[in-house]
Image 1 (spheres, rainbow, N blue to C red):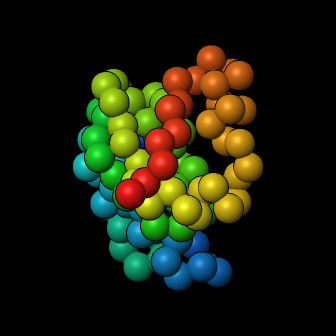
Image 2 (cartoon, one colour):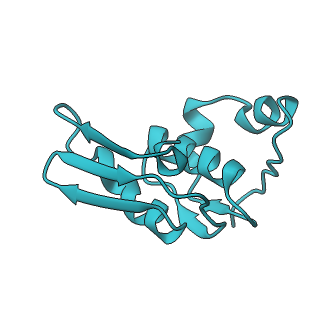
Length: 107
């Protein structure tokens, strides 16, 4: 959500060293992100755009789903096993809040 918030946001991660593996996926969607060591700087943009992205972990995958909901166009999140294990019925819950999530089984 920081990707589309006004202004700049600064997040520092001191526990999980791979927390920002999601950054390249968000950049593919049009986010303005700079990663320096344990800190990520996010400059909010007006819009992000749908893209084919890949989930790398539980929270990152959920973040990609949420980014897809606010993106213009269609976002396809692959490697959703993490998301399915960590968030039961996420698609149904988001759809009950007027989201538009279609879950497809991966090959």
